[in-house]
Image 1: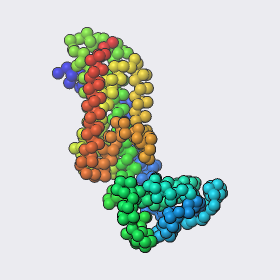
Image 2 (image 1 turned 180 degrees about the vertical axis):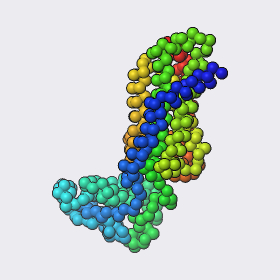
Image 3 (image 1 turned 180 degrees about the horizontal axis):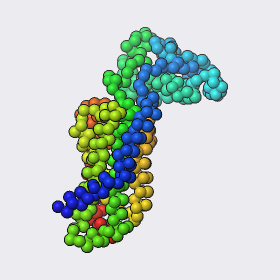
Image 4 (image 1 turned 120 degrees about the vertical axis):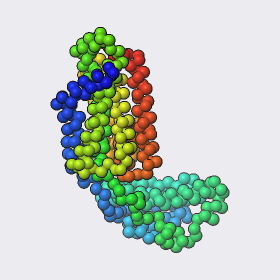
Length: 393
């Protein structure tokens, strides 16, 4: 009974605070509106013409693969994408690229055919130009040829040298002329046209971030009792110490769940954000984030020595996780994206985005399950921290 009484007064205290209403309820909606409106063009999906590329070719190889490459460059769509100019040295090709006369460079080493025939790895030197799209086009075109060569080499290594000749189609027409065997296929990477808008993306990202910030409010509330020395008077009353802490956590958890409901409802009604049809899953994600937020509140309030320290730790932790998870701007695949997979925000954000795209339930469950495991793990750690330190002055 003491827990619910304390939780009730905690909710009343927070709901009468203008700061809480502004930061936890109004500010997320304002940020979603600003970011969704300002960055809407970055999330528009539209067809884009593939640029043709002027390539400086340095052919140092005079072996059998020279003819294969020449036939490849004269095939189908390749002639529309790649325009070849031959140079004698790599330095000459690099100078032409620096001058802007060529847009990409390819150096075929002298021992390329020998390595291929011996079953070695097929490698070229690619000289990048200044245009990202043209570099990507050239890399994909030439990379497809190398992948095909390396595929035959892997067959040769695994099953013997005669397999390469048996598996490799014979004749220029069979290899490069037929449309079905083209190295470049035009089409879509996905059978579905579904995609999230900027408002959807930032609604999910800001919801995750501000639900975690609710933990900071809970931690500040607990630290405030210590700094004002009201906790000592509360401890002198016939109320178990654990009831005091869990009462405050329960009250703040209620506010956090109310916050998630308000943000989801307001963005749906006023901004037209489509959260998908998995509202049960969405509620589970919000519940997991609430558990994570309250667990962080307990751990940080037990370890920090002041309200200032609590704010500093929360600010750094949440901002870092939001950035690494792509909460401020979607991150491309790479080092930062890999690190982001170790954050709570990543799994919560991706869960919500999969719901918005109406992905298969099994796909959504993969993200929600990992988020739930993180929430349970942090909950156990926070209980351990409480048992070690306690909630007292």
